[in-house]
Image 1 (cartoon, rainbow, N blue to C red):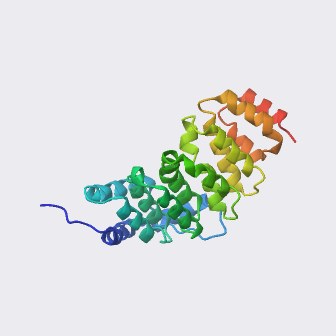
Image 2: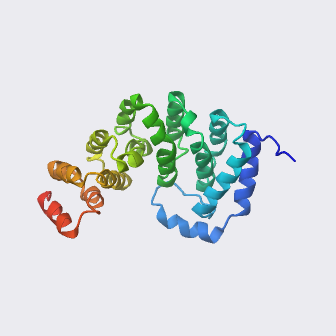
Image 3: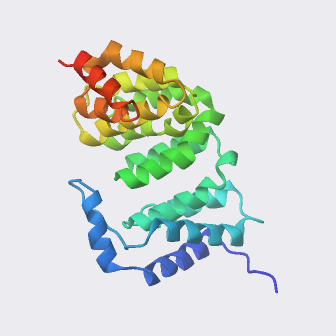
Amino acid sequence: MTEPVLSPEEVCKQALNSLEAMADPERAEGGKRFFKSEEPIHLLGIRAPDIRRISKEYFSKVKSYWTQDQAVELCTLLLPNKYLEVKALSLLILERFVSSLDKNHFFLIKEWINSHYCSNWATIDTLCSNVLGPLIKAHPELIGEVLTWADSKNIWLRRASIVSFVKLARQGEYIDVVHKVAEKLFPDKEDLIQKANGWILRESGKTDMNRLEQFLLKRGKDIPRTTLRYAIERFPEKKRKEILKKTKK
């Protein structure tokens, strides 16, 4: 018996029912401790591996006849939902269509961020790592636009300007761009930006620790200590102390 053809609206309805059935209020309450934000965080209390499993199940149902257009439509239906797990599910399904996304989708994603559909670090990082990063790699002419995000008043666009390059930097790609964005964000006072900046610098050093060290020593007095401490985590203890001493303000 063949599986029924499902529209984005039908997947939306089924997915919401599936997630609501798995909700764990106790786990949800405990999960809130990972989020420090003025905006309220809404959780269903579903484990990340279960969200990934459900995304695979729904993708297997639609992969033979959906295109990126249906996946994007599903995101427009689910991303406005207040629950983080619902947002994550939509983005994990979209990830499987990322090779078909184009520059128009990039600017639609920017609208999603500006519409506050991704206003927490978990959702924005999923979006950046799984969707925006591959999209930028496929269309490097978009990098100039991403650089402007570092100057945005929207904290989530600023975080996206750096986190979108994490997986690329880990492979030693776009390091010059990473350094440029990082420098633009050094004056930022937001903890979530300082930590993200340190995170990407740390990842950028995976393929060239010497290059990272030289960058940190050159710009060290401009780097927030939170960013710097994240950036040097993979250096030996002696080297970490040396860098901290040489960059002390």
